[in-house]
Image 1 (cartoon, helix red, strand yellow):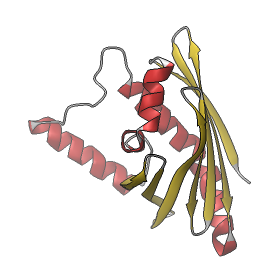
Image 2 (cartoon, one colour):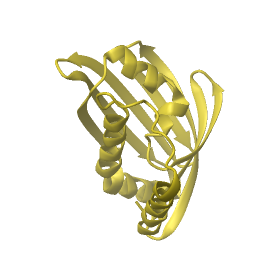
Image 3 (tube, helix red, strand yellow):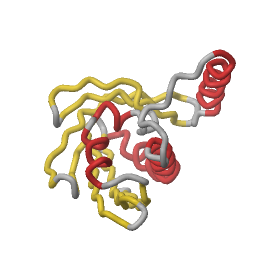
Length: 171
């Protein structure tokens, strides 16, 4: 079972970061590939996630649920799709510079797609984790608002072009 552990510090108090993590819609804005969120209750959501396998887009519908938690210290969640199960453990610890987030992600592929799921996770896990950490870092940067204002004028065009460029490159 492929797995990846990550640790990074976020410029926020544990309770502030915990509230963000427990707000599934806000959290998913920092998770690469999430395109659609349907909240089922405060602990469960259906997520549509898009990932490229070579040049072929793979779209998965995951049912994600929080299995157990000890606010604001840790939580354990599971996300399941037809050919994979992902377990996620997140713990938060106060540091001198904010909060250290430790994440442990494990993926189990099943059936005919197991080799593809395993290879894709191994290939992209470090990159996606770095993107997630970067997004959280920007959200909680000193003095910056939680939500960035929408770009306007030429900023909007540049923002749109950057999104198109990322899609074309598959990142």
